[in-house]
Image (cartoon, rainbow over all chains, first blue to last red; front, side, top):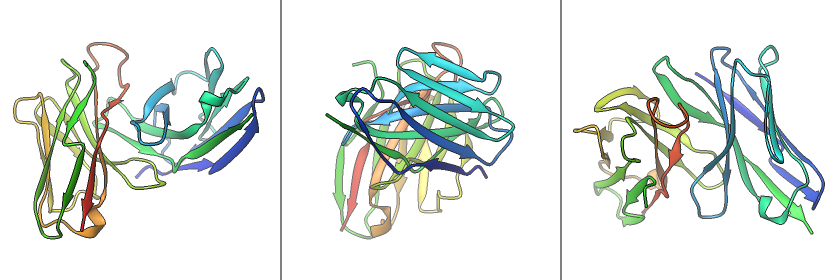
Length: 114
Length: 116
C-alpha cells in the first residue's frame, strides 16, 4: 500500500519568514495530493491540493509543488502569520480507481514565533 | 450548518462494550469516508462508501468494526467488544465528483472515543 513520509515533524519560523514542509510517497499510481491544516481540537481543513498532471499550484501565500519522478511534493507558506500556527498534514491517494482513501503523513507542527 | 456532522462528539465506554457512531455527510455528497486519528498522528483510512456501496476497506478495519450506509446518505460505524487500543478520534469525511471540486474530502468534527 501507499506510504507517505513527512518532514520535519516540528518547524519553528519567525513571523514573516517562509516555511517549507516536504513529503514523499511510495506508490507511483497516486495522483491526488492534498494538504490539510489542523488546529488543536479541530477538524482537518483542506488548504490546497494538487493533481499529478500539474507541477505547481499557488493560492495567495500558499503554494504546492509536485515532482512525480522523484515522488515528492512540498508545501510552501510565505509571509507567515501567527494564525498559520497549526499541524499540517500531507496526503496522497489514487482517485478514480476505487482506492480513494487518503494516506496521510504524520504531520508537521508549525510554530510561528512573533 | 451544511458541513459534515458527527454524533456523538464524545463517547466514554468500558472495555468489551459495543459503540456506534453516526456521520451525516454534506448534502448530495455521494462519497463518504471513515478515518481514525490517534494523538500526534495523521488520520488513518478505515473505509469508503460510494452511495450505499462499501468500495474500500483498510486492513486496519478488524472484524470488530463494521460500517454501513444503507440509503446512501448517513453512515454508521460500529465497534464491537471495544478494546483500550480503540481509543481515538473517529473522523468522517465526504466528497462528490458531481458537485464542487472533485475528490476534495471535507471532514467532520470527529467522535472522540475513550475506552476505559
